[in-house]
Image (cartoon, helix red, strand yellow):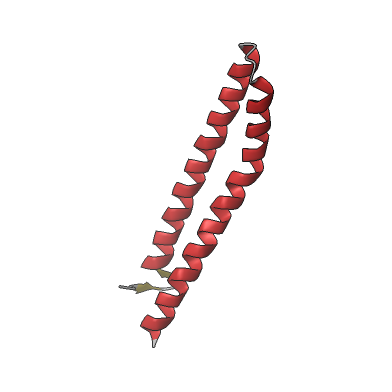
Length: 86
């Protein structure tokens, strides 16, 4: 159900909330990876280099995945909105 209130609709508010949740999840994942990489390096772990490479990889991949998920969500809901407008 879409409730129009000026330019903001309930779907836009829902999308904003989904974006905020995705951003928080991404931040938690990246900070967690950095903490693990630092702990591995300070602990002189044998896998410290691999963990560091994984953290660098996730620095680029996690935001891209979040962006793609948001894009898919927006496109999927756009089709629903177009059908309701007809």
